Image (cartoon, rainbow, N blue to C red; front, side, top):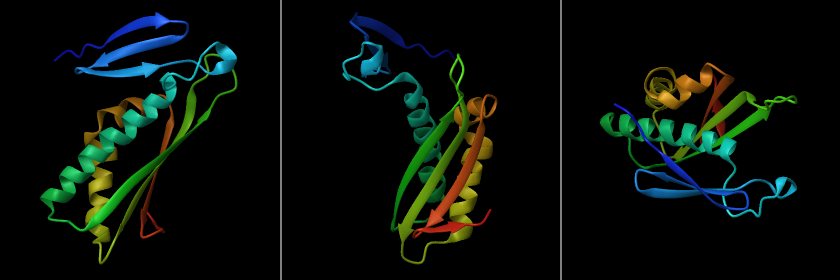
Length: 143
């Protein structure tokens, strides 16, 4: 199955990408002539990574009947210093909060996503070191 994204230049350094009927504006940093009218393209990779895993994880946890939690992710990347500047290390923190959360199920859901289901993770692992960290109620789970 093919995926198609249409990206149009709208002037200056701004581009409008249409993804599944949704529009995402991208713009360059001000130092490169941008006007901060949209996200930078490389950080959108990090958003895609966290979104991909997040969708997997909430789906798996629902099937495991895990409820009553809040969930967020922080994704940070370290870049190379020479062109082409790429991410060499990406750390994604999966942070869960709630009462009496089942650590084993949360770890299983995260690992299924990051090791099996998330295609974005699979692609990025080929180019960067992707580090996974899990936190339950602000305490890091040792993997």
